[in-house]
Length: 449
Image 1 (cartoon, helix red, strand yellow):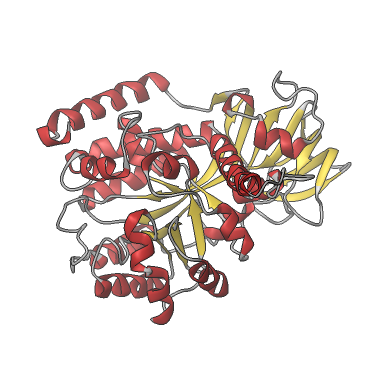
Image 2 (cartoon, one colour; image 1 turned 135 degrees about the vertical axis):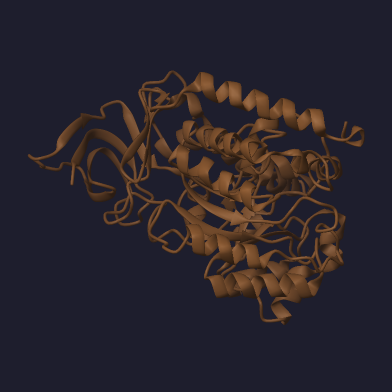
């Protein structure tokens, strides 16, 4: 297999044994990281000069509705209730043709890759088997690593607290057709409605089906003004359903006791800080999670209302929690310090290794550890907003943005080099995306406008 040696880079490994390397080398062979060290000799390898570059693990987004890329920006002023009524319940989400879903997921995955997100969980809305097939095809075409979280229709009949509708037979077809092996870029999950958007019996059945299929199960839960009242996490705990294969999205309104339950069972959480603060889910629980041993992961959530990069979400997560902690101290007449109560390194972990852990992929990705898949990004350290590098972790979390990305690799393959996506016809993407957007918006009922 082809060997490539990246030389003289600043390397953020996210591996506690290797730590950060101020000037070092990384050797990959095929799709695998072979060695990371201060200096590596590999006479049979292609050498890439990575001077003035930062090499770090690819970013991991654990919660994104990828198809919404074709109606991006439409919800800049939407609340959560407005979003639900216009995307679900027979509105925009139900207006898509299968071909719209292909370009939507291709575009959405390219957007992620361009911004250094090498892995994401696609929390899907499934309208038909043909839509499913095209959503998967779009992700595959882009070359991204993804968990395809198979979901349900956006029809109002599905999104009802008493709904007993389920499409688990179709989920089994999809698993058999596309995801018989876990040793591939695209793996499967279930995106279930959960006990706050379907009946309890349906939720329990779908969780059990996820376990039969041996896939991750993700759900929106524990947020909004119903989240604290429902105590859904407690109900799942009492029913013996919590576990490391459950991914809880948002959880802004859960109690400390419920967070402890998630910690005890190893369940993961996805924090989408910007959207949560904007739309009315509640305040991000980043600090509460860390306090009780739950390592949060990060997601963009909906590009109808924000941009598709995790650099922004890292900053939102960090500063929202700092503001919360600082304000509590100030109200007691205490000035914060000498150190702030949450650190940039914890947020960088949330966007990399902890995201990989939440998706049950940390044995493959999330750190630049020898033996793992070569998913990594290269940032231009001589960019004006990064120069001169002093605290590399702080610089990445606080000042970096997608414009700093020179190259992106997934499983050892370059999908972006010298600031440009590889083998992508952007004009064709643009034409298809515009056509999909126009079709969806033209068919939406008047009530959606």
